[in-house]
Picture 1 (cartoon, rainbow, N blue to C red):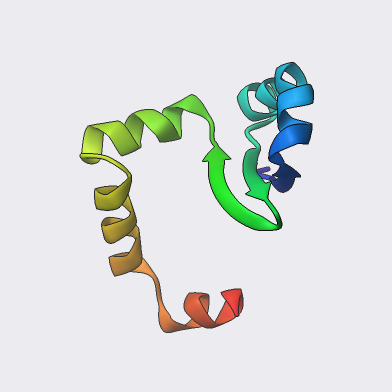
Picture 2 (cartoon, rainbow, N blue to C red):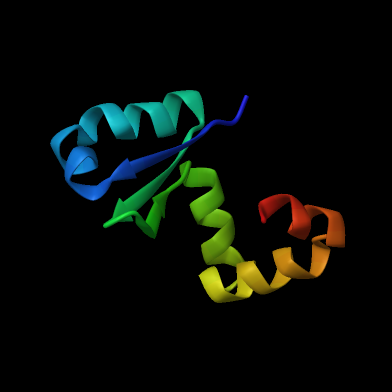
Length: 77
């Protein structure tokens, strides 16, 4: 089961060992927030390696956007 969690940057920094364990062992994705704004994500290494292999974050986002359906876009709103 994949779980997403939002976490303030300072809280992630204070608990980095636990955060990394959740990402590595439990397959969580942790979104780091600065003043309630997402600024980065910590993802399982396999996902990071795929992003690198495909040519970086921008290219990966481009590919994923091409596979989104209109329904999945409206679910985010």
